[in-house]
Structures are given as structure tokens and as C-alpha cells.
Image (tube, rainbow, N blue to C red):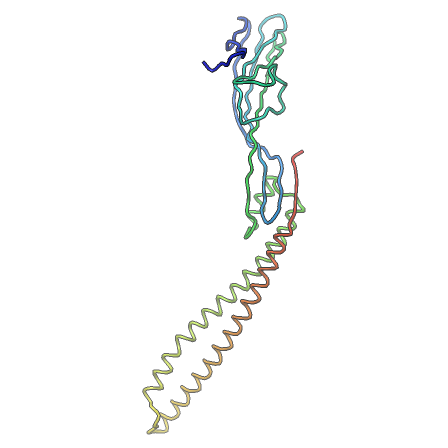
Amino acid sequence: ETMQRGETKFLEFATEMSMDIWQKQKDESRFCSSLIEGGVLRVKLGKVYIQEYFLRNKSQKDTTVYIEHRFRKDCELIDTPQPTNPKPINFYIFKAQAPANDTEIFKVQERNMYDKDFQLRGIGRNELNGLIRNGYINQEGASAIEKYIELLGQVNEVADEINVIKKTIREVESNFPRIRANLSTIGNQESTKKEKEMRNRYIEELDSEDARLSKMKNEEKALAHKKKTMELQAEAVLQSISMKIASE
């Protein structure tokens, strides 16, 4: 019911009684090529469908066998003998030779191509090592990405410094209410020498913490500028990475 007008169809396993025919199927992904451009690694892969036809000839003479193989419209034939019908509708037909008293394996391979993209922005060494193991990145590309990763590490170190300063700023700012509350309990008119000394001490502490806070905020601002500059440098390195490889 799947045949079209003008198509020849061989009855499945319609061979002489002295032939045994069976088949095995599997599929696998194969690397074809990769390209790095604009901070993106684009890998071209092929999903290969492999079907092996085992032709066991138990007779004393060589036999010609015609194999009918369903046509995959989204695939192309690779590493496979040309079919007798180069423009199939539903089935390929292959002509195979089965030697006398032997088993011939006829392999049909069909490949469907597809792309797989990897964003390299923020990549870590573990991810890089995985891409290298898969053969998607060569030594030249790996060295360039390694430089980018080193810059990212420096950016993260500065970010850690900023976080430490921010934490200290919060601690200092939380200390001001306590100092001011202590000052308010003493008032402006000192009745005793001890109260005057305490008031001066609190004022000195307030001034000291205020100066410390101002200094830390300036440091935070300088580090934020440094971090931004380093991020721009890292991005420039990322965008400059160029690589192209193809499978042999």
C-alpha cells in the first residue's frame, strides 16, 4: 500500500531456499565540523542510522541479491554503494553479491545533519575539557578559551573583594544607630567629667566610623570600575576567538 506508480518493489527475503537473510540496526552521532564565532561554538553533527544486512549463502554458487531498504527522506546515504534506483520514492534497492558458502554483510548508512550550539560566555574549565574530549575544539581554540577563562577568574576575584567590602559597609552602617543612641542618653550638658569623656569617645567613634565608611565606599566604587573594565577585556577576548575544524 506504500508503493507509488512506476516503483519496483521486491518481496521481502524473496530469495532461493539456500539463503538466510537477517538484519541488525543501530544509530550513532558523529562529529562533522565545528566553528567558533561571536562567542558561540557551533558543532555540526550527523545522526547516522546503520542497518546491516547479513546474507548467508549456503549454496555452491555465488548469488546476486537485491535488498529493499526503506528510504529516509531526511537523510543522505554515506559510505554505502549506490542503489539501483538513485531517486527512490519509498525504498532504495541495492544490488549485492553473496559469495558461495559464505556470509556477506551489506551495510547501509544514512545520515541526518544537525547543529548543536554551545554558548562560551562564562564557560568553565570542566566544560572546556568536555568539549575537548568530544573533539569539538582543537588546541588553538582551547588555548584562546583558556585565556578567556583566566580573565574570568580575575573578574571573580575582584567580585569577591567587592562582596567583602559590601559586607563590612553593612556592618559599619548598622553600628551608627548604636553610637547615636549612646550619645542621646548623655545629652549636650555634661554634669560630670565621666559623661563628658564618654560623649567625646562616642563622637570620636562616630567620626572614625564615618571616615572608614567613606573610604570603603570609595574602594567599592574603584573596584566596581576595575571589574567592569576587566569584564569588557574578557568579552573582547571572547569575541576575538575564531576556530574552524572538520572531521577527517
